[in-house]
Image 1 (cartoon, rainbow, N blue to C red):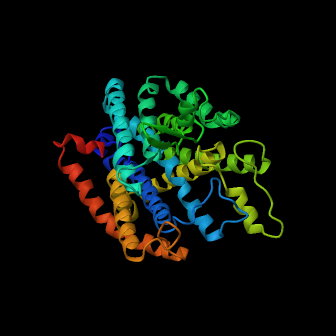
Image 2: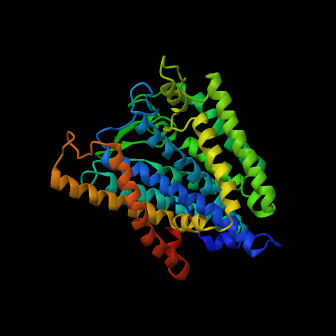
Image 3: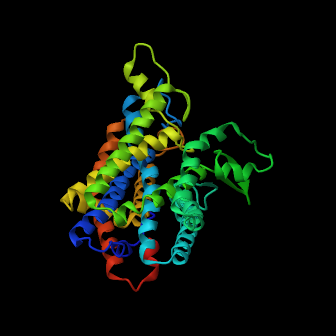
Length: 397
């Protein structure tokens, strides 16, 4: 989705780094991105075949089936890690480009992603053509965040870290500002922090991903960049492990205190599993501090662990998906849409107004069955990007 050209990342290798170490380091970034894509596929398969049984945000631990809860919980790592890696990739891109060139690239790439969200992505999610409703989702949020980062990267690293931390740690304080349709600034506030719905040119706009917290995440991802250009691999892994475990520990402590960072959790008498589910049920739209601490903490630990694999088979396989994430994203959306439309044509709307399956295991079977078939087209496109440097627009995918 938001990968910077891998060849540009390779140019960011510091003097004295060995090619093998540099390759493992860069492969770890693409491998984590690839893992995120594989996990994301599960969530989108769930949304395709379980459209009749949507989950709330945060998920209601009292009523949701545990298997569905943990299926959904698995995918919550995707957006935060991807946005952070987008910032990190932008830093590596900038190691062989001026700040002006990096800003220009981020601006153009961000605007391109926003365009994709309003067109090709919207068509993939819509039941009608042309779409009557536009959901401003993750691609929109990444695009806006890239546009903002194009300006923020001119700050000093300390200032950038401060901006990112203030946004990520403090935006929950803004939850009390709730505007209603018709209020002044309702539309910009709905796009920035409050999930909302409004009409524009006869089309319904839903701000699924308010962008403010994601701007903080991409800024912190960018600020992490010097660890990947000026540290020995062992030192970097230790720092990543320390940072990741620190974020997870901070999440556990803050969540246990129940005083800040998300909606309170609760004890379900006689049902310890549902009590645990309540503890883990966090707000994604917009992502709360606790949501980001837990997901980015796990993602940071995984990034350090992927560096340990040093180009093993799993890393290589995942890095193929992570090297062409936008292609994988678009391709899998339309594959799922085609399968859904075929099922709807054959069996009709068997779940109210939509088609759906009765059992969650069917979702998992579809998910497992699609991973390998989706891999080969993505590998072809990834190789095409490496081969055809003369096709300028490939770097935007």
